[in-house]
Image 1: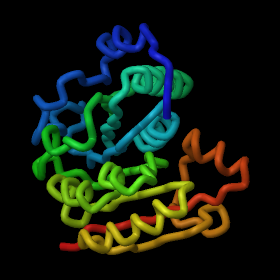
Image 2: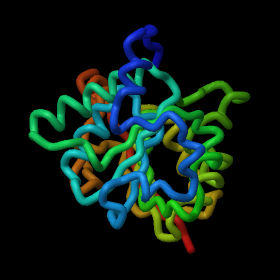
Image 3: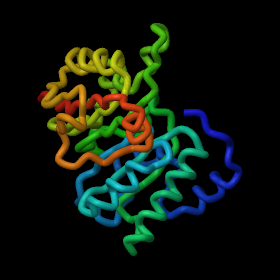
Amino acid sequence: MRIRYKKWARPELEASSFYEDNPEEWKGKWKEHFEKKEFPLMLELGCGKGQFISKLALENQDINYIAIDLIDAMLGLAKRNVEQSYKEANIEPKNIILTRFDIERINLILDKKDDIQRIYINFCNPWPRGKHRKKRLTHTRQLEKYKEFLNENGEIYFKTDDDELFESSILYFEESGFEILKRTYDLYKEPIFERNVQTEHEIMFSEQGIKIKALIAKRKI
């Protein structure tokens, strides 16, 4: 998604108590970043404007979350959305960290000591052109990287509107040794999540009559 530069985003992020500007320094010790270090740790890749993670983290105060994006403007909006959601609930955002990083190099900021229990990938760029497909967040190349920090029984929750990306992703997961526990070609007709937290894109595509595809994949030991 293209988004205009927002000059306020960087200063607001740097002043935020739940933004981390130096994620490389926390590799292998992310749990220490949170007040409740014993809580399980989950990750959203490509959090965008933060509608999803702000709702998910608020609803699950017994889980810690890291949300990653590469664009300051996106993270600035995510920060504001988190603040608004938590303010309405009269709760301090202590179970969420936003950070800026290139997901293609994610192994520079996470390793097996971080013990990520679940990864959320929502409506990522489908990169339809052949030479760009390795950039997909569900590509085999990326999945192999995630295995370096995902718990041995960890899961990946994936949603998309793109048919070709979904079919290819099924193959990517299988090639990387993941077991697909559940899949659906119409999430609203055939729910596979206990609680489906909608994203901005999900609402938009659903209103256009586009079916939401989704799957849950589990890492095999």
